[in-house]
Every structure is written in structure tokens, then in C-alpha cells.
Image (cartoon, rainbow, N blue to C red; front, side, top):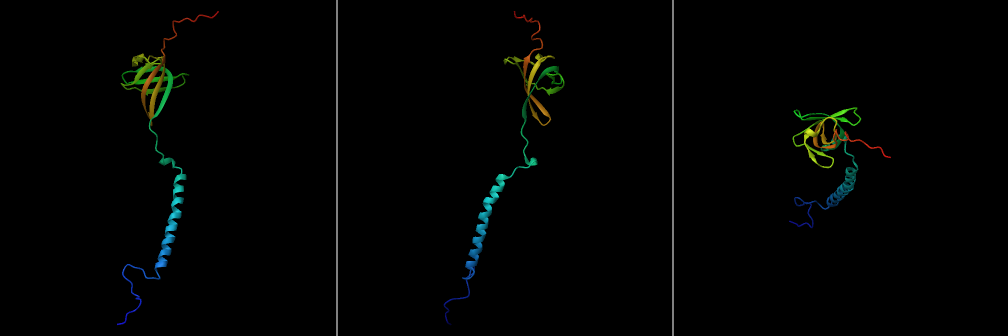
Length: 153
């Protein structure tokens, strides 16, 4: 048998001499395409604006309401407060741990919330549920009564 300087038969798992440059070319094109698409895809993600239905709703909103006590139902733990103008009212559910204090910080009880008392109600609103955190008594209903103002001369 004669030995040939080169054999047409290749080993399993290797490319023949004429296929290697072609495969290297395709690999280079593929890598270039991936590199070019990478930054563009990243830029699109940064510039997107979230859709309204994908926005997560925030937690409870801290709010305040100023008005005059219309009524207090201690059995049902409900406080009814009119606006300062008296045009509308708000109803607040009370809990046992609801704190009541005067404007200067003196602790009071719920019984101090008599009709006509000016108050500032701090509460959290989550959906349609309210949770009163604390109530500040701005001016008791009898403050100012019995005091006579003296005209200045």
C-alpha cells in the first residue's frame, strides 16, 4: 500500500481544511450581531415608561383633616367631624389606642371630644379604609367663652 501525503478522511469531530474558514466567518458574524444587539436592547429597557396597570399602588397615605366635632359615638367608636365651613362632614372610625392630645401636647381622653370642639385628625387612608392615628384638640368648645375682651383705648 502506498502512503498518501494527505488523506481525505478526517477524524470524527474535526472540520476539514476548507470548512474551517467558513465556520470561523459565521461565528464572527454571529458574535458581532450579539454585541451590536446587546447595548441597543439595554437602552430600550432604560427608556421604557412603565404602564399604568404595572405600577404598584403605594401604601397607606398619611392625611390630616381639620374640623369641628359634630358627634362622638363611644359605643360604635365613630367620630363625626364637620368641616370648618360646616358644608360637609367626615366620619372617622376610632380604635382603643387612638391618641388624643391638646395642641400643647397634654394627653386627653376621647370624652374630651365634645360637639363643637375644633380638632385636627391625623389618619391613614388605604383604599376605602381609614385608620385614625391621633387627634389634636385645637380649641375646646368652651375656650373663649366667659372671657370679656377689653376695648383698647
